[in-house]
Image 1 (cartoon, one colour):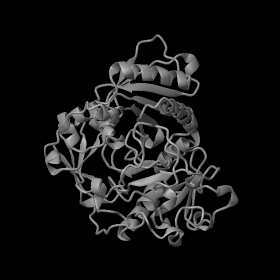
Image 2 (image 1 turned 135 degrees about the vertical axis):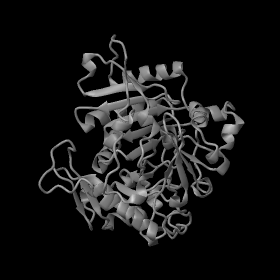
Image 3 (image 1 turned 90 degrees about the horizontal axis):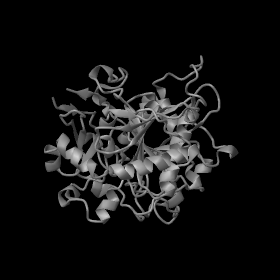
Image 4 (image 1 turned 135 degrees about the horizontal axis):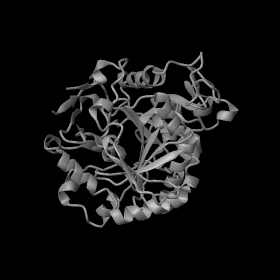
Length: 431
């Protein structure tokens, strides 16, 4: 049965806040001239999300519902988006994996074009090109940082301090793909290029943990894997169905005992069009972050484009080395796939595919989604070579035991998490 997804429709107007040639610091930007003296709201997360809640703990749903989504809807009402994403048609495609297709005919026309080479994963930050210090503070929902204690807390007006010279911020994506689409911009004033580092990746996992919802995921695109801005950022949004990749079966990779100190489990995807590694658990959030960060650093330093999906409230991370842009440059992608104008970044690879043309949307099938995404994947031989290098870089060692197949947590309908009852009805899946 085909499922339709709907969310509340609201009026919108074109945002001017990320247009080039804006009024500089006269409009309260995120640059050195304005941010240090700002009083943006601050959400401070607890140092260890696994510790039991304290008496003064914020309610579990506060971060996602009362803060992030509520503030996102406020920016909708203020007209800060380039288009109304709530008017886009979305459907779950019938099939075993349940790919999600969205028709967004205007996004590729209104989205910021790529301003850098696509054949280099590591490129220096260029202040002359668009970056997030040029964004108006109207688009920022709050600052996001480590409170250092056992409880998370929120301050409506939080003056910057000397120790917070380069705050991390959560801002709207003015060209949204879905409801609640935001950007996490680590240490915005440090002007970091788009590449993974240990501190920033751990920050992203903390954001997923604070959201505490299986339907709120974070994603990362490297340069060469369809990132469009060379200023470090993660994307995130809310979608109340499991992603196809979350439902895909995996094969556990047995690890030698010496490699188990971190508590991280590693699997590889099976029966999915894009080959990828799945990292789970970890004794602490930092243990998981460190292993995945080292994997990403190897990919970056060896010029292998990749995408990352942070799932299950930060407990499950998918890493996808990819080669679609390389195939495009070599003329190895068929013209009918190029005509779809789909750039397979993290959301598309995970199974949420944004289509630009109504014909493609109406004719979308599991077979067509599979065919597109299969072009993204490394070959089996190349993937195994990359996997071996990642294991070496992360200090993991495969044991001689046989690999174990396992079902996804979402493989059966009985294990699919139910949408939270405190979400508004307009955000739920309608059958």
